[in-house]
Structures are given as C-alpha cells and as structure tokens.
Image (cartoon, rainbow, N blue to C red; front, side):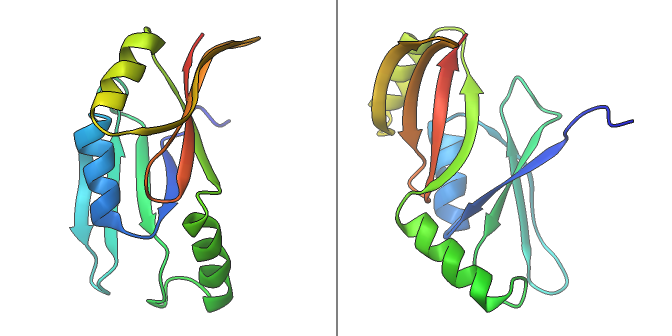
Length: 135
C-alpha cells in the first residue's frame, strides 16, 4: 500500500537559477545539494511547513543522464515556460501574492476566485508555471 509521496521532480535548465528562485523568492529550504560520483548534481528543496516533501530540481542537459531526444523536447518546453510544476497552497493568497510580487515573481494570472478556491498563476523563471491557491 502506498502511504505518501515523498519526492516530485521539476525539470529546469539552470539549477543555480532554480535554487535562487525556490529558496530566496519562495522561501523554501534546501534539503540536498550534492554531487554524485558521475558529476550529477542532486538538488532538492522543500516548503518550510512541509519538510518531508522534497522537490527535486532536475537539470535537463546533455550529460548522459537523459536521451538526447528527450533533452531536445524538454528544453523546447522549458524555454517556452510550458512545464506545469505544481499547486502551492497558502492561507492568505493576497498577502502571499503581494510578498512574492515584491520579490520579483512574475504572475500570469492575478488572484481570481475559482470553484476550488482563489488562484493565481506564476512562473519560476526556469520553464515551469505554478498555481498559488487558497482553498
């Protein structure tokens, strides 16, 4: 029986840029940042209030970790900000929206009432877009 999800992957083109965004703009904590024997960088972050959920910031590149055909397609999607990452919940969407906006986070949808709650959409600058939602 599966009991929980512990890791999810967000594909990025630049891990340093992603690290800066998720830590310095969203306020996440670094869980792991290490180089493996083959040079692969294992980088993961977590929301401070959800430390048991790790988001792996996985670099898309031609380093032998991915088939070249996959790299080409993923790079094209990321360069067009077409990868949907996740839904991040907040207790006060308007305060969080203003805080993130003041830190330079680019929003593509202002907080809007939807059937599931109030939602805003933002980009991470690394090819992913996310939902910020207050239920």
